[in-house]
Length: 201
Image: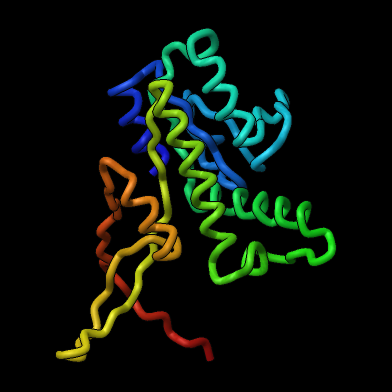
């Protein structure tokens, strides 16, 4: 999907796109000619050797220096949204533990009262930053992963497969309600010349 979106960006904004490789995502490293930067953490100083910086520092830099440093930038591509969520959730836990040193959270589920409050905070942090970009004329594209989910119809009891996101429904709904366009891409394959292997012996 990274290659497809790169080709899309090169048609619409050949000199005006930037891929943000979030967390452990590293697809852009293998794509020739792609304009990208790594954001392995929410906060981090710029590292020229690894072409990396914290996500928050990158967004702040674009906003504050749009005219001087990024005059042609039209769109940033978040690759992938799930990885961005992971680093945002780590930041939410860090913020919680900084404020609650007497009762530290070990996971996002324990932060800020539980019941999804920590994850909600991470989602809001991400969306707030991405929409700040729009105020300086930079739009965003978000790439995510999909998965198959088997669903049984309650009336006919027939089972069918649905293609859906690998995000939680709660997070996905927050994101999809803010997007101008939402697309799902998949490869429809058919296995031919399938042969059964004979058991040895």
